[in-house]
Image (cartoon, rainbow, N blue to C red; front, top):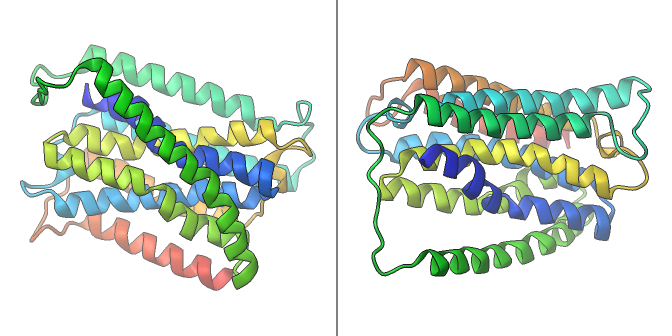
Length: 296
């Protein structure tokens, strides 16, 4: 199904830039703020892109035509974002014992992701409506060839993700804008380009659920990248080394996700392709980016 493929398979691969940017930022650059800023910043871009997808959708509101499974995915995404934000806040305000060199939040985030993916799978199997999306057939393309193309594309994404952390650190040093801001706005935009490309392509193909689920699923998986970063950051819990300023971006992600959940339930009507939901997502992103810049 489109929701399951979007949440797990597509979102995992389109989030590879965030994964390898984080690995590079931790192991090569030693800059936790770059990867944490990238994670939250990429999530704001994904939510902005959902608003832009709704603008681009021709036949009514996009959120009026997707399956209920996307609501469940959005709820899990909100819980994971708030858990990461709580991890930053508690790590800076309270003396919580670490588990070796990793934070208490690392196993919790991993468990939450596994539970979320499992529950979305069960929901889709149990409550999927009888009318499925049109299956697009590629008679001349075998499964093996499709998997090879998928793997080759992934390799290019991995290479770009590693390089981005080094470039981002140089930008932060040369401009004086700080790693948190550069990670959130600049690297966050670049690492979400795969999600943008895939989701708009899926929308043109008519795979609306895959387009939406890719964005929300990427937000879920992006938070899980903190687990990888924490395991690699040997000086101590990675969120303890990250700036408290990330809580601002996290709050923007949480508010935008709440609006998305409301829109998936209320299914807002559009007027000349504008609705309160897509306009709110765009406005919140612009306001958050501006405030993040002025704070930096």
